[in-house]
Image 1 (cartoon, helix red, strand yellow):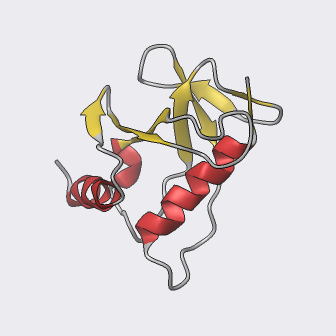
Image 2 (cartoon, rainbow, N blue to C red):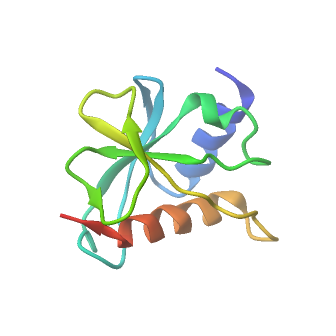
Amino acid sequence: MPPGVLRFIDDITQLGFNPMVEAGLVVYRITPIDGAYAGIAVETGVGTDELASWPQVPPHWVHFPAGIGFYRTNSQASPKSGWLMHSRQIEGWGDTPPRICWSSHIRAVLSEAIT
């Protein structure tokens, strides 16, 4: 596995997300604190191809089961059956550890989700 993928897995494991690789994604569960899914562990993923330069370059596409929708999104079929990938930009890390920025980013994306 490429070093960026291994580093991402290690980073989110440190946050207790228990990632696994399947269908070309690093899949894990995260619990948002706001929005329609607040307090619910939601399965999400990141394409392994987008993690080649982790943590210097954050992934652009966020993968969710197709039942999770957004009012505004640019989406495409995910390599994981029954999932969609959504275009979401994250701007730089600053001085905060990338794993913390990534988990905050995903929670913010999920706060915009509709059921």
